[in-house]
Image (cartoon, rainbow, N blue to C red; front, side, top):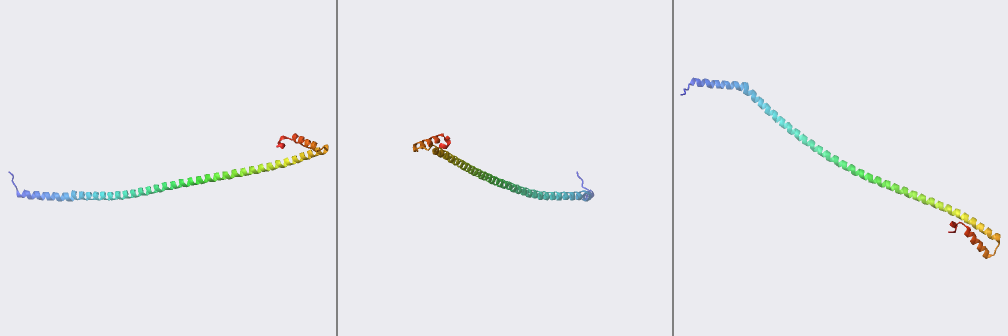
Length: 164
C-alpha cells in the first residue's frame, strides 16, 4: 500500500513552496501587474469613450439646434422675400396705374385741344360762310322771301358736316 515517508512529505512541501515563490516572483507578479495595467487601460478607455460619447451627443444637439435655427432663418428669409415681392408687385401695379392715368389725362387734354382747334376753325369757317352768304344777299338786294331762299340754297350747298 501506500507508504508515507515523513522526510519525503517535508521535502515535497519545501519544493512546492520554493516553486510557488519563484513562480510568484518571476511569472505571477508580472502577470498580475500586466492584468492590473490592462484593467486600468480598459477602465480609462471606457471613461474616455463615455466622455467622447457625451461630447458627440452635445455636438449632435448643437448641430440639431443650428439646423433648426437655419431652417427657421430660411423660412424667415422666404417670408420676407415673398412680402418684398408682393410690395414690389403692388408698386409696379401702382406705377403702371399712375402712368396709365397720366397717359389718359394727356390724351384727354390733347383731344380737348384738338376739339378746341377744330371748333375755332369751324367758327372761322362759319363766320366766313356767314359773311359770304350776307354778301350774296346784299348783292342781290332781294325781298325777304328771296333772301330766305338764297340763304337756304347757300346752306344746302355747304358741306354736310357743317349742316349737322
